[in-house]
Length: 349
Image (cartoon, rainbow, N blue to C red):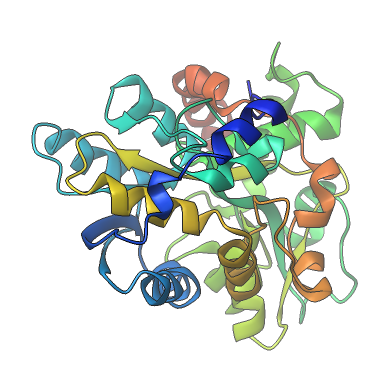
């Protein structure tokens, strides 16, 4: 389960020492492994370039990947001789990396900004914390759906049958949709997903694709589909790109947090610079800048974002997030994946 931060008295004592990660003598190169595409573009402008301006002796090399699983595969292959110093990927994958001893511990002494993170950002005490919060949303084509929906139930509206782009498991979008469907039905998903599986099976005949390609946002925008499931940050980006044609809805039944963590790779060849970068990435200024750039909710409680950005992220609506322990969810992954394959997706054929 999510754990809380160190007691304030301990934090204060630790911060009274000289922080290794903030040394003005930090220099050299580090390699950051993180997501490709628009994420890379926005993160470079909002976080990496300002960091390099603050630490002019440090060069950050960005190694882009389109999936957390691929980044984990690279970590495994480099275990004896790591070529990466910092890695940013989803929490489910980072928990695997922790378990396999591929990631190194972090302390408040090394990374002082750990002291200011919201409780939901501490995934596993001592390891890489959350660096962004995203959340699952329903997207819709405003040319077709004139009145903004408010409930997850809209996916079952027969008026849109055959026009749904729903991402299934093994994507964690599928995991999240199952949890949200359970919440909608009043089911405790930690005990059983029988009701949600049956409800999603009812939805299957209306789904045009469970594997949206190129992605659900594009399919909804170009009219191939009318409704889709996706992540808020990407959806807000596409909403801007389409001049508001793409609608984004956080269901009244609640949503789930998608947590990306930032981690120090065990065996990093430049741990001082790596820790300095992690500390900066968690700082109020970096968190606020990336929220404004791409609508990921900040994890630092001191980050100040505009009212516009707050309204378009889950930042001011954390009370609408459903409790989901991704470590526990990982233990159910194989079972739930089979439910999706055998009971849900097959119901649409």
